Length: 443
Image (cartoon, rainbow, N blue to C red; front, side, top):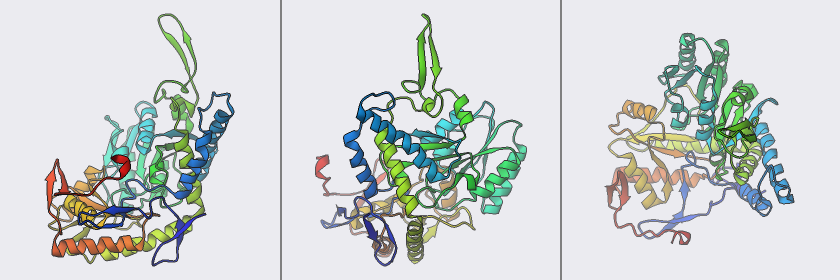
């Protein structure tokens, strides 16, 4: 295996594609890209790319092909279910449904819950978990200030919930603040009230090992593009009964076991799960990449956690020296994965992100991170007039130099101002007279 050593540490982690990518600056120089936007999409692991390259010559249709390549692709696709099941410690009876991403998975679950299910969730959730649940039986709890407050608030909400099926939605790690939520403790509260619990693990899966049985959750959703497999696959793992009783998420080939012609209507017998919710030609390559990433991360959790802990400490300590820096936080007593969102007094988040990219070759995210409710609330708490923030997120592709460059660049922008001229266009800050050219494949 190819391993990368993070400068300034002794921790070996799996290498990513693009670690040596050089990008142009508006000043005419080229620098190694500092990707501090892992929380949006993580780069591809080199081993995942190798796994995809190995599969591509064998790629063919799956499940009903008699050809040998089709049999190989079918085996790859079905074995991926077991590899993902092992990654999350799923129960033998759990089903594994492949989707496009976490958003797709949670929308599928929302379409599958029994009628009149009471749904309880915190309003700090990512839109993928916040928006699929509509109607009078949905209760949104204001974001708590501590883990203990979260437990108490969930207990009150479930006590007041209507009699019948109940489902709690919770994030494993906030995509805004990186804070780890007390999932196992929240599951205990849910169990006391006879509720099921679904875990949005999009930000947790790249950073920490997950065990469905240990956490005692019923469903888990995450995306390949967050765990270093950016090939368009996601997954929903969990109890099969609700999914089996629901109408197919999409209708078409694969979701049907038999279709018959009755003249004025068609008779349809739907497939059992997981095929019931996987209509159409599946993303064999994406699923294989996702499964490969799961196995690679599973072999390197100790190194991954140590690597990110060192860099997160370095990042937070460095950013705290920037004048006007304010870090956003929801829970006052929570550990964090490698995500830091912040504002800088007197500076628009979009301007800072644009200048960091144009002048320093640093990629960060600015905005409300598909979590508008909680970001709007948090930025007001730290005294910002904008409902936007900057987010720096680290992962396996991050080095100490990236972190130090961000801290130094922010300090220079705040104390000395930018070297370039910027203007707002279509709601975004852009560098004026930007002469940077796109790579040849986009020409």
